[in-house]
Image 1: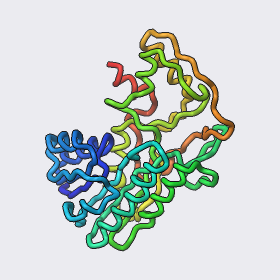
Image 2: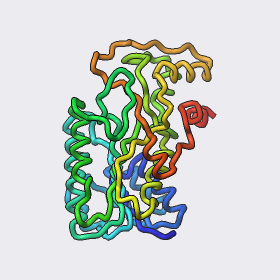
Image 3: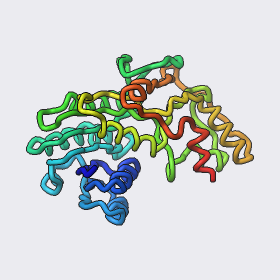
Image 4: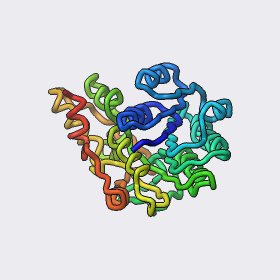
Length: 286
């Protein structure tokens, strides 16, 4: 299959997506704010790489809005609230303005499971309430609503609420264990993780889904629902190190929930290659 794909905010996840798409013979273009990433994308063979901030309109004339697929996987420019406003809300508005004069078959926005505020290890799915979410989570919800449901220029739109992404070159928890650093927060808080390559697989599953799928919100995690302490203890054991301590200082309303991935597994027949942190981190330890 030959297709055209533009990746907005083409960083850690987007670069891996670009590599997979190029291997399939697709024409790939990309937008990134990072000059080092831009150089790597050109080396990969990405047809057109534009260096700009997604929230600016300066890039609109550099990328064609006529695409089979567009994926917005931008990350926040800073961890502060202002970074969320700029990258997610203003960035999504900029993307929609760019597409007003074009036509796109499928649009994917990668959001986050942080939109779910539930505590008490409750199981949540795409129909669960987001009432009471944090300010940052609320900004992600606002960004979701800009593209879902989609404007007339987009045939269908998908929202992927991803768990915590880890993988090659991004394994902060592993490095903290190696360095003997202690952890903030509670050891028994559930982590909903997703390996980078499985995140790419979920994006492709949406883009390549049948015409009967008019666009959906999907949670994307490995479905393992492991406590933080269990993961850290396993990593320490594999490294023959003492397990670091946890501060156990979570506030009472800190989100602590199990995110269900049943919808995407049933509707798109997607399943993670790395079905738990054990498989995912095993590759990173070799």
